[in-house]
Length: 340
Image 1: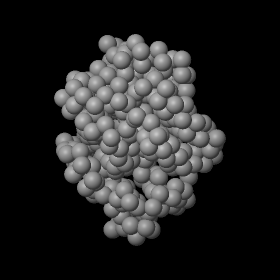
Image 2: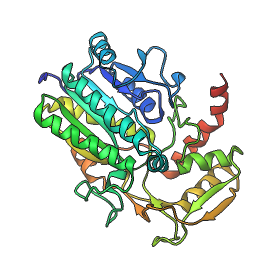
Image 3: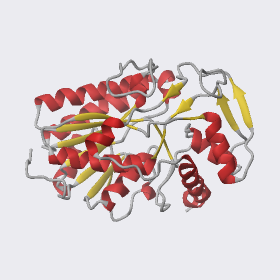
Image 4: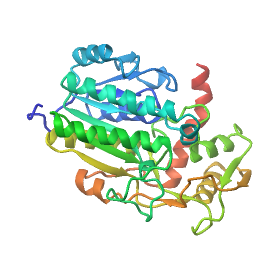
Protein backbone atom coordinates (compact mmCIF):
# COMPACT_ATOMS: atom_id res chain seq x y z
CA UNK A 1 0.00 0.00 0.00
CA UNK A 2 1.27 3.40 -0.93
CA UNK A 3 1.43 5.46 2.23
CA UNK A 4 2.33 8.61 0.25
CA UNK A 5 -1.18 9.02 -1.16
CA UNK A 6 -2.79 12.08 0.41
CA UNK A 7 -6.10 13.87 0.42
CA UNK A 8 -5.04 16.10 -2.46
CA UNK A 9 -3.59 13.36 -4.69
CA UNK A 10 -5.60 12.41 -7.78
CA UNK A 11 -6.34 8.71 -7.45
CA UNK A 12 -7.22 6.57 -10.51
CA UNK A 13 -10.54 4.88 -9.68
CA UNK A 14 -12.34 1.94 -11.29
CA UNK A 15 -16.12 2.29 -10.91
CA UNK A 16 -18.03 -0.97 -11.29
CA UNK A 17 -21.61 -0.50 -12.45
CA UNK A 18 -20.66 2.99 -13.56
CA UNK A 19 -23.36 3.04 -16.25
CA UNK A 20 -26.09 2.61 -13.64
CA UNK A 21 -27.96 5.10 -11.47
CA UNK A 22 -25.68 5.65 -8.48
CA UNK A 23 -22.49 4.56 -10.22
CA UNK A 24 -22.88 7.13 -13.00
CA UNK A 25 -23.28 9.89 -10.42
CA UNK A 26 -20.14 8.67 -8.64
CA UNK A 27 -18.26 8.93 -11.95
CA UNK A 28 -19.37 12.55 -12.28
CA UNK A 29 -18.43 13.38 -8.69
CA UNK A 30 -14.99 11.79 -9.04
CA UNK A 31 -14.32 13.67 -12.27
CA UNK A 32 -15.50 16.93 -10.71
CA UNK A 33 -13.04 16.29 -7.86
CA UNK A 34 -10.16 15.67 -10.28
CA UNK A 35 -9.80 11.90 -9.94
CA UNK A 36 -9.09 9.91 -13.13
CA UNK A 37 -11.97 7.44 -13.65
CA UNK A 38 -12.65 4.30 -15.65
CA UNK A 39 -15.79 2.16 -15.72
CA UNK A 40 -16.72 -1.50 -16.04
CA UNK A 41 -20.37 -2.39 -16.62
CA UNK A 42 -22.13 -5.30 -18.32
CA UNK A 43 -24.95 -2.97 -19.48
CA UNK A 44 -27.65 -5.40 -18.34
CA UNK A 45 -29.43 -2.54 -16.54
CA UNK A 46 -27.04 0.35 -17.18
CA UNK A 47 -26.81 2.63 -20.22
CA UNK A 48 -23.66 3.35 -22.18
CA UNK A 49 -24.74 6.97 -22.66
CA UNK A 50 -24.72 7.44 -18.88
CA UNK A 51 -20.89 7.33 -18.94
CA UNK A 52 -19.11 10.35 -20.44
CA UNK A 53 -17.45 9.28 -23.67
CA UNK A 54 -14.03 10.51 -22.60
CA UNK A 55 -14.12 8.08 -19.63
CA UNK A 56 -12.44 4.73 -20.45
CA UNK A 57 -15.26 2.17 -20.60
CA UNK A 58 -15.05 -1.62 -20.46
CA UNK A 59 -18.12 -3.75 -21.11
CA UNK A 60 -17.76 -6.96 -19.17
CA UNK A 61 -18.14 -9.00 -16.00
CA UNK A 62 -16.60 -7.90 -12.71
CA UNK A 63 -15.74 -11.56 -12.06
CA UNK A 64 -13.48 -11.68 -15.14
CA UNK A 65 -10.05 -11.55 -13.52
CA UNK A 66 -8.25 -11.28 -16.85
CA UNK A 67 -10.27 -8.20 -17.75
CA UNK A 68 -9.72 -6.71 -14.29
CA UNK A 69 -5.98 -7.21 -14.63
CA UNK A 70 -6.05 -5.49 -18.02
CA UNK A 71 -7.97 -2.52 -16.61
CA UNK A 72 -5.79 -2.14 -13.51
CA UNK A 73 -2.60 -2.17 -15.57
CA UNK A 74 -3.85 0.07 -18.38
CA UNK A 75 -5.46 2.65 -16.11
CA UNK A 76 -3.14 2.48 -13.09
CA UNK A 77 -6.12 1.78 -10.82
CA UNK A 78 -5.53 2.58 -7.14
CA UNK A 79 -9.10 2.30 -5.89
CA UNK A 80 -12.29 0.44 -6.72
CA UNK A 81 -15.80 1.77 -6.11
CA UNK A 82 -18.13 -1.18 -6.37
CA UNK A 83 -21.74 -0.45 -7.41
CA UNK A 84 -22.42 -3.37 -9.76
CA UNK A 85 -25.16 -5.72 -8.56
CA UNK A 86 -28.87 -6.44 -8.32
CA UNK A 87 -31.04 -4.21 -6.13
CA UNK A 88 -34.75 -5.11 -6.26
CA UNK A 89 -35.81 -6.51 -2.88
CA UNK A 90 -38.94 -8.44 -4.00
CA UNK A 91 -36.98 -10.03 -6.83
CA UNK A 92 -34.35 -11.16 -4.33
CA UNK A 93 -37.08 -13.08 -2.49
CA UNK A 94 -38.36 -14.79 -5.64
CA UNK A 95 -34.89 -15.38 -7.15
CA UNK A 96 -32.41 -15.51 -4.25
CA UNK A 97 -29.71 -17.36 -6.20
CA UNK A 98 -29.49 -14.48 -8.68
CA UNK A 99 -28.73 -12.12 -5.80
CA UNK A 100 -26.20 -14.38 -4.12
CA UNK A 101 -24.46 -14.78 -7.49
CA UNK A 102 -24.49 -11.14 -8.57
CA UNK A 103 -24.01 -9.48 -5.18
CA UNK A 104 -21.92 -12.00 -3.25
CA UNK A 105 -20.15 -14.49 -5.51
CA UNK A 106 -19.15 -11.91 -8.11
CA UNK A 107 -18.15 -9.46 -5.39
CA UNK A 108 -15.92 -12.15 -3.92
CA UNK A 109 -14.23 -12.51 -7.32
CA UNK A 110 -13.81 -8.73 -7.61
CA UNK A 111 -12.25 -8.50 -4.15
CA UNK A 112 -9.87 -11.33 -5.04
CA UNK A 113 -8.83 -9.44 -8.18
CA UNK A 114 -8.26 -6.27 -6.16
CA UNK A 115 -5.98 -8.13 -3.76
CA UNK A 116 -4.20 -10.04 -6.51
CA UNK A 117 -3.46 -6.94 -8.55
CA UNK A 118 -2.48 -4.71 -5.64
CA UNK A 119 -5.38 -2.24 -5.53
CA UNK A 120 -5.06 -0.65 -2.07
CA UNK A 121 -8.50 0.96 -1.57
CA UNK A 122 -12.03 -0.44 -1.94
CA UNK A 123 -15.39 1.32 -1.41
CA UNK A 124 -18.49 -0.86 -1.26
CA UNK A 125 -22.06 0.11 -2.06
CA UNK A 126 -24.11 -1.39 0.75
CA UNK A 127 -27.59 -0.81 2.09
CA UNK A 128 -29.78 -0.09 5.10
CA UNK A 129 -31.42 -3.44 4.27
CA UNK A 130 -28.59 -5.00 6.28
CA UNK A 131 -30.40 -3.76 9.42
CA UNK A 132 -33.59 -5.69 8.64
CA UNK A 133 -36.39 -4.52 10.92
CA UNK A 134 -34.51 -2.24 13.35
CA UNK A 135 -35.79 -1.96 16.89
CA UNK A 136 -35.09 1.77 16.94
CA UNK A 137 -34.97 4.64 14.50
CA UNK A 138 -32.80 6.56 13.71
CA UNK A 139 -30.49 3.59 13.13
CA UNK A 140 -26.78 3.88 13.88
CA UNK A 141 -23.94 1.67 12.71
CA UNK A 142 -23.91 -0.33 15.97
CA UNK A 143 -27.49 -1.52 15.45
CA UNK A 144 -27.91 -5.29 14.95
CA UNK A 145 -27.62 -6.44 11.34
CA UNK A 146 -30.35 -9.02 10.80
CA UNK A 147 -31.53 -8.79 7.16
CA UNK A 148 -35.01 -10.06 6.32
CA UNK A 149 -34.45 -10.72 2.60
CA UNK A 150 -31.77 -12.19 0.33
CA UNK A 151 -30.83 -8.74 -0.96
CA UNK A 152 -29.84 -7.58 2.52
CA UNK A 153 -28.03 -10.84 3.25
CA UNK A 154 -26.13 -10.73 -0.04
CA UNK A 155 -24.81 -7.29 0.85
CA UNK A 156 -24.03 -8.15 4.48
CA UNK A 157 -22.04 -11.21 3.38
CA UNK A 158 -19.97 -9.00 1.10
CA UNK A 159 -19.39 -6.53 3.94
CA UNK A 160 -18.03 -9.36 6.08
CA UNK A 161 -15.75 -10.57 3.31
CA UNK A 162 -14.33 -7.09 2.95
CA UNK A 163 -13.68 -6.73 6.67
CA UNK A 164 -11.88 -10.07 6.74
CA UNK A 165 -9.84 -9.24 3.65
CA UNK A 166 -8.83 -5.83 5.06
CA UNK A 167 -7.54 -7.60 8.17
CA UNK A 168 -5.50 -10.07 6.13
CA UNK A 169 -4.20 -8.02 3.19
CA UNK A 170 -2.79 -4.54 2.41
CA UNK A 171 -6.13 -3.05 1.42
CA UNK A 172 -8.46 -0.74 3.32
CA UNK A 173 -12.21 -0.64 2.92
CA UNK A 174 -15.04 1.86 3.15
CA UNK A 175 -18.54 0.37 3.43
CA UNK A 176 -21.35 2.86 2.86
CA UNK A 177 -24.88 1.83 3.83
CA UNK A 178 -27.41 3.75 1.77
CA UNK A 179 -30.88 4.69 2.87
CA UNK A 180 -33.41 5.74 0.17
CA UNK A 181 -31.56 7.24 -2.79
CA UNK A 182 -33.47 9.64 -5.05
CA UNK A 183 -33.15 12.65 -7.32
CA UNK A 184 -30.82 13.32 -10.22
CA UNK A 185 -27.70 15.29 -11.09
CA UNK A 186 -28.59 19.01 -10.74
CA UNK A 187 -26.89 19.72 -14.08
CA UNK A 188 -28.98 17.05 -15.81
CA UNK A 189 -26.03 14.82 -16.65
CA UNK A 190 -27.49 11.63 -15.14
CA UNK A 191 -30.51 10.32 -13.29
CA UNK A 192 -32.62 7.26 -12.51
CA UNK A 193 -33.11 5.54 -15.88
CA UNK A 194 -33.79 1.91 -14.97
CA UNK A 195 -36.92 0.45 -16.51
CA UNK A 196 -39.44 -0.74 -13.94
CA UNK A 197 -37.64 1.01 -11.06
CA UNK A 198 -39.30 0.52 -7.67
CA UNK A 199 -38.16 3.76 -6.00
CA UNK A 200 -41.10 5.83 -4.70
CA UNK A 201 -39.92 9.22 -5.98
CA UNK A 202 -39.13 7.74 -9.40
CA UNK A 203 -42.60 6.14 -9.55
CA UNK A 204 -44.32 9.33 -8.42
CA UNK A 205 -42.39 11.42 -10.97
CA UNK A 206 -43.43 9.03 -13.72
CA UNK A 207 -47.06 9.25 -12.57
CA UNK A 208 -46.92 13.06 -12.53
CA UNK A 209 -45.76 13.03 -16.15
CA UNK A 210 -48.40 10.53 -17.28
CA UNK A 211 -46.06 7.57 -17.62
CA UNK A 212 -47.97 5.63 -14.94
CA UNK A 213 -51.64 5.57 -14.04
CA UNK A 214 -50.94 6.31 -10.40
CA UNK A 215 -49.06 5.35 -7.25
CA UNK A 216 -49.73 2.54 -4.80
CA UNK A 217 -49.40 3.31 -1.09
CA UNK A 218 -48.45 0.11 0.73
CA UNK A 219 -49.65 0.31 4.31
CA UNK A 220 -51.62 3.04 6.03
CA UNK A 221 -51.65 1.65 9.58
CA UNK A 222 -48.03 2.02 10.66
CA UNK A 223 -47.17 3.68 13.96
CA UNK A 224 -46.17 6.89 12.18
CA UNK A 225 -47.76 10.37 12.13
CA UNK A 226 -49.96 9.66 9.08
CA UNK A 227 -49.91 5.85 9.14
CA UNK A 228 -47.67 5.41 6.08
CA UNK A 229 -44.05 4.28 6.00
CA UNK A 230 -41.36 6.83 6.80
CA UNK A 231 -38.01 6.80 5.03
CA UNK A 232 -34.80 8.83 4.92
CA UNK A 233 -34.40 10.13 1.34
CA UNK A 234 -30.88 11.10 0.27
CA UNK A 235 -30.08 13.00 -2.92
CA UNK A 236 -28.01 10.85 -5.26
CA UNK A 237 -25.46 13.64 -5.82
CA UNK A 238 -24.89 14.00 -2.08
CA UNK A 239 -24.43 10.24 -1.91
CA UNK A 240 -21.92 10.38 -4.75
CA UNK A 241 -20.02 13.11 -2.91
CA UNK A 242 -19.95 10.88 0.17
CA UNK A 243 -18.03 8.35 -1.91
CA UNK A 244 -15.47 10.96 -2.89
CA UNK A 245 -14.80 12.01 0.71
CA UNK A 246 -14.69 8.33 1.71
CA UNK A 247 -12.04 7.74 -0.95
CA UNK A 248 -10.02 10.69 0.33
CA UNK A 249 -10.22 9.28 3.86
CA UNK A 250 -9.02 5.83 2.78
CA UNK A 251 -6.12 7.32 0.83
CA UNK A 252 -5.10 9.63 3.69
CA UNK A 253 -5.11 6.84 6.31
CA UNK A 254 -4.11 3.55 4.66
CA UNK A 255 -4.64 1.51 7.84
CA UNK A 256 -8.17 2.80 8.37
CA UNK A 257 -11.39 1.04 7.33
CA UNK A 258 -14.95 2.02 8.20
CA UNK A 259 -18.65 1.29 7.83
CA UNK A 260 -20.92 4.35 7.70
CA UNK A 261 -24.58 5.19 7.12
CA UNK A 262 -25.52 7.50 4.26
CA UNK A 263 -28.68 9.47 4.96
CA UNK A 264 -29.83 12.83 6.27
CA UNK A 265 -31.09 11.78 9.69
CA UNK A 266 -34.70 12.72 9.08
CA UNK A 267 -37.62 10.96 7.47
CA UNK A 268 -40.63 11.66 5.26
CA UNK A 269 -43.73 9.52 4.95
CA UNK A 270 -45.08 8.14 1.69
CA UNK A 271 -47.84 10.75 1.82
CA UNK A 272 -45.29 13.50 2.48
CA UNK A 273 -43.47 12.47 -0.69
CA UNK A 274 -46.63 12.31 -2.81
CA UNK A 275 -47.77 15.69 -1.51
CA UNK A 276 -44.39 17.16 -2.42
CA UNK A 277 -44.48 15.68 -5.93
CA UNK A 278 -47.96 17.15 -6.42
CA UNK A 279 -46.83 20.54 -5.16
CA UNK A 280 -43.70 20.68 -7.33
CA UNK A 281 -45.30 19.24 -10.48
CA UNK A 282 -48.71 20.86 -10.17
CA UNK A 283 -50.30 17.48 -10.97
CA UNK A 284 -52.75 15.59 -8.78
CA UNK A 285 -51.67 11.96 -8.40
CA UNK A 286 -54.02 8.99 -8.32
CA UNK A 287 -53.30 7.11 -5.10
CA UNK A 288 -54.24 3.48 -4.49
CA UNK A 289 -54.22 2.45 -0.84
CA UNK A 290 -52.94 -1.11 -0.48
CA UNK A 291 -52.04 -3.45 2.41
CA UNK A 292 -48.56 -3.45 3.90
CA UNK A 293 -45.87 -5.39 2.08
CA UNK A 294 -44.30 -8.15 4.15
CA UNK A 295 -41.09 -7.05 5.81
CA UNK A 296 -41.44 -3.29 5.35
CA UNK A 297 -40.49 -1.44 8.57
CA UNK A 298 -42.70 1.44 9.64
CA UNK A 299 -39.76 3.84 9.82
CA UNK A 300 -36.17 3.62 8.60
CA UNK A 301 -34.08 6.71 9.26
CA UNK A 302 -30.29 7.00 9.34
CA UNK A 303 -28.33 8.19 12.30
CA UNK A 304 -25.75 9.99 10.14
CA UNK A 305 -23.60 11.52 12.86
CA UNK A 306 -20.68 9.19 12.17
CA UNK A 307 -20.23 10.11 8.50
CA UNK A 308 -20.66 13.82 9.22
CA UNK A 309 -18.11 13.74 12.04
CA UNK A 310 -15.61 11.23 10.64
CA UNK A 311 -15.54 12.32 7.01
CA UNK A 312 -16.68 15.95 7.32
CA UNK A 313 -19.38 15.16 4.76
CA UNK A 314 -21.54 18.20 4.00
CA UNK A 315 -24.74 17.49 2.03
CA UNK A 316 -25.73 20.17 -0.48
CA UNK A 317 -29.21 19.00 -1.46
CA UNK A 318 -30.81 17.90 1.83
CA UNK A 319 -34.27 19.13 0.92
CA UNK A 320 -37.17 16.97 -0.28
CA UNK A 321 -38.49 19.57 -2.72
CA UNK A 322 -35.05 19.88 -4.31
CA UNK A 323 -34.80 16.09 -4.66
CA UNK A 324 -38.24 15.97 -6.30
CA UNK A 325 -37.47 18.93 -8.60
CA UNK A 326 -34.32 17.22 -9.88
CA UNK A 327 -36.11 13.88 -10.30
CA UNK A 328 -38.91 15.51 -12.31
CA UNK A 329 -36.48 17.48 -14.48
CA UNK A 330 -34.61 14.29 -15.30
CA UNK A 331 -37.81 12.36 -16.00
CA UNK A 332 -39.00 15.01 -18.46
CA UNK A 333 -35.90 14.56 -20.60
CA UNK A 334 -35.51 10.81 -20.21
CA UNK A 335 -37.71 9.67 -23.09
CA UNK A 336 -35.72 11.84 -25.46
CA UNK A 337 -32.46 10.37 -24.20
CA UNK A 338 -33.66 6.77 -24.45
CA UNK A 339 -34.88 7.38 -28.01
CA UNK A 340 -31.56 8.88 -29.11
